[in-house]
Image (cartoon, rainbow, N blue to C red):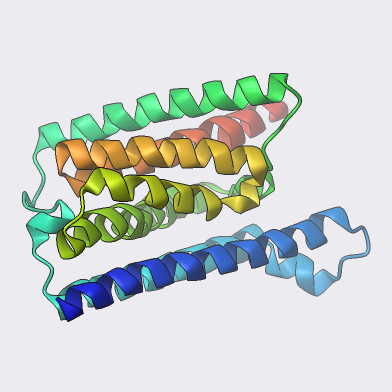
Length: 242
């Protein structure tokens, strides 16, 4: 029980750390993009390759710490939603469909908020958009999968699945604070982004609880992020060139 409590504490400590890092990144991005006299060093630190490398490294470390905690506590794979490994084709297809629906919901929410005069902060998304085919390959094959895996491990498997099993609570009870934390950890997207992401986080949490399958939400998360980046950065840039 003490080990379980320790893992729960680790999960929420990591969430707090992610929040702190997000707020720091938000200030750095704002300083570099809002102030015309920002230094060349700051601009270089926020170049797309540097940002992508930072995101990949951070997410890999985050996933590594969570998995180390899982190993140390000996959390059963079934508790995390990983009872069926490797996943079936139907599981992946469900994740793809789920992610597509989430993207449509995200677009609808963003459109409505923009119509009301409240726009999300999209500067980080722009920084994640590479200018070369090789860069896009790295984003789609390395960066976005790492983001989806690490965030779902932490916010769904750790904060909901393992915490519910270790503390004897309903996963639905934990889905609420986990989703609020998920939204707050995307504060760099602005207040609208926090609300939209928090809502999407709860839908992902619901999908995780209902299916009891972490792979479904990992795939859905990846599809959501991938479509959003491709539509708003790659297609838009292609259209502007034409």
